[in-house]
Figure 1 (cartoon, rainbow, N blue to C red):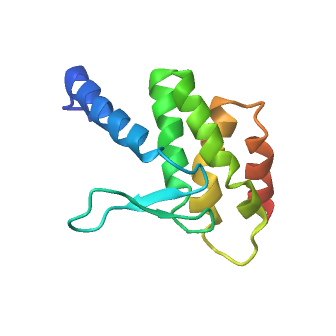
Figure 2: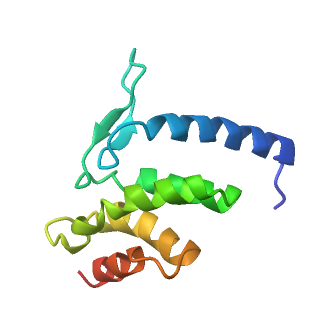
Length: 125
């Protein structure tokens, strides 16, 4: 199957995503955008133990992978690092979402990162 999406369309999507992700990084690096509620202009944010916490840093890693821009790398590392304490949480079945998403990308895109150890710890937890 071939993609019906053109490079121009893909670039436009990433341009919009880049702006949204950049605005979502305002504030604490230990609060994770969960979504927005109806009639709100600001993201609802959660802490690192929320089952959705890993999705946002995962998106930052994808943006870094796409752009190779060190600003995305810095943001991805900041948000991912705040999840490290969660890697040993034996009380949740959601570690794959919380840790696996961002840490597997970190291990792949930046293999010398301390995040790789957190990913391995979560795998054996």
